[in-house]
Image 1 (cartoon, rainbow over the protein chains, first blue to last red):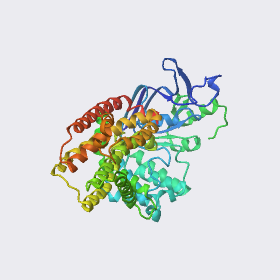
Image 2 (image 1 turned 60 degrees about the horizontal axis):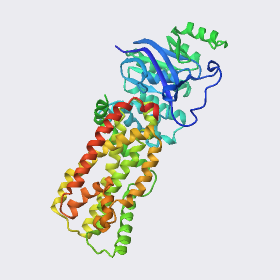
Image 3 (image 1 turned 90 degrees about the vertical axis):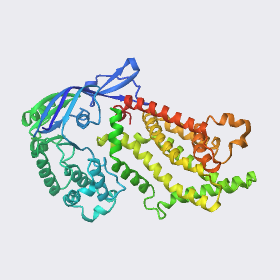
Image 4 (image 1 turned 180 degrees about the horizontal axis):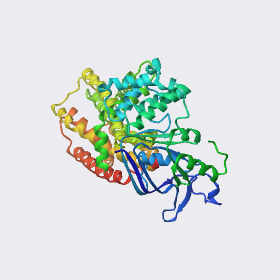
Amino acid sequence: MTSISLKNVTLAYPLLGGGMRKRVVGNQLKSAGGIIVNNNSQRSRSIVALSNINLEIKQGDRVGLIGRNGSGKSTLLRVVAGIYTPIQGKVSVNGEISSLFSAGIGIKPEVTGYRNIELAALMSGRDPKKIPEVIFEIAQFSELGNYLNMPVSTYSNGMAMRLKFSCATAFSPDIVLLDEWLGAGDESFKKKAQLRLRDVINNAGIMILASHNHKQILKECNKVIWLERGQVKHFGETQYTLQQYDNFHNVESQI
Amino acid sequence: MSLLDLYNGFIKYKLWYALSIESIRTRFLRSFAGFSWVFISFGLFVLVKVIIFSSISGNNDPNFPAYVTVGFFVWFYVSSIAVDGCSVFVNSKNWIHGVKLPLSLFVYQTVCRNCILAGLNSLIVLAVILYTQPNLHIQSLWNLIFIPLIVFNSIWITLLFALIGARFRDFVHMITSIMRILLFLTPVFWHPHQMGKLWQYLQFNPIAHYLILVREPMLEGKVPLTSLTVVIAITLVSMALSLLSFSYARQRIAFWI
């Protein structure tokens, strides 16, 4: 049973190095970003990116993640992915995770597309020699043809993204985490990508999509988490939560 | 948990092997001579040093070219491990922030890459030995134990330096400058007995013992017990320190880099 559960999760980024010692002035509530706190005991300072997050995400959920810049969307995705360990609270995840954070991550630009597919297979714990049909399928899906024999550095951004997306969804993950992702790509690939994601979710999966594009969220998601300064302001049905967000920030509704 | 990470990283040997091959390939990407640059740079360096140092010291010892080559071979491995170790996690930043992988994987990758380079360099060592015909002793076989010991040791040194280097960015610069000085304080081009009393102090340089450990059985036919003790001691201490620091820092690495 695929599931994600966060209990009282708090995460702070320590600020290390020069330029980090300047005093915090003014009302932080007016600026974007997480709250900066002084940690007097250690003469250090940190940014509280998530505070006291409680979430239960169940099998089949397609969750949208909204909030202003610096509200903790990316951090939350990385906590679920197990990359950042929170300073407090408990994260339990059942299921294999595949994350699509940015095109550059997990791809070696100097290496050919095919070799990158093999590396992606190895990363997900599979032996590429034993699954030629999956490798073939990724090659087909990406529609990159002869470019797969060329280094990824010769690709355009969109092409690199196709490769990354094809790899990330090919090894039947249970949970797909997307950070500002689906917006890129040409129309025909976007359609294919949406169908592929639906497949993953229908196979007992979970998707979390962080985005500022509320139209997209309305189309793709059945629930929405609204983050405000590292806290969950609301977690509920898509349309209602998006409306609340728009009212709160006095923005004209996108939907 | 940190032991589990070391285990989980190790069993992904296909991945770290593939990544280390790719990182060497990348280094020689689009160069005409490719991998041969490893031989060319090591071979030329050794050749020039042998010519210069044998004419300075008027040394006609037939063992001298092999002495310098083996010494420099070990030096090259040990110093690259120390320097590369410092930036293991910093250089893997993109991967650590993007994919959930055991952190030890990047340590194995670095050790593996240096082993492959040392493997290529060892062909030069072989060529020098075949060409200059030094008096090799049967005790050379001890290296079948000593070299794996040094490789095992380098895992812990890499892990320890990687952790320190991720938190303290001065570390890599410090180690790089120390290594530059140590090259002259290590018996690569000279023999300890040429240094007279000075050797008493120079022997506190730990790297000297790695060289002696490999070289003495080959060229002098004895097992250097002092050096063996030093290397084993360093292995045990670095293992203990790196495991302790790893269990403290494992979950903080992603925030430090």
